[in-house]
Length: 99
View 1: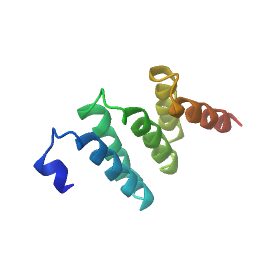
View 2: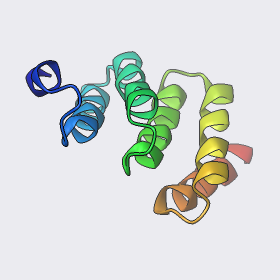
View 3: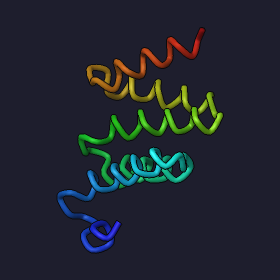
View 4: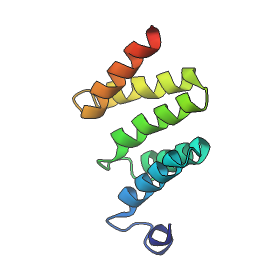
């Protein structure tokens, strides 16, 4: 957080923001993790962490009980980043949600 405050456009800003989301997620603060992951996609839309941020936001939404929004985010990963590792994971999660 301190890095982001001091260097909001720094080369590690997107990575730092993503890992803040991971920290909140690991603490089971899913609402704050979604907020952090969203910032990655909005503030750093061309960064390599975007597919991971969208995927993890979908997982957080699922943990929050919002399965519809989780599916929207999973589909977004598949559509926007079809050849990514995250898209493969999203497809698996989508298949599991249909069962």
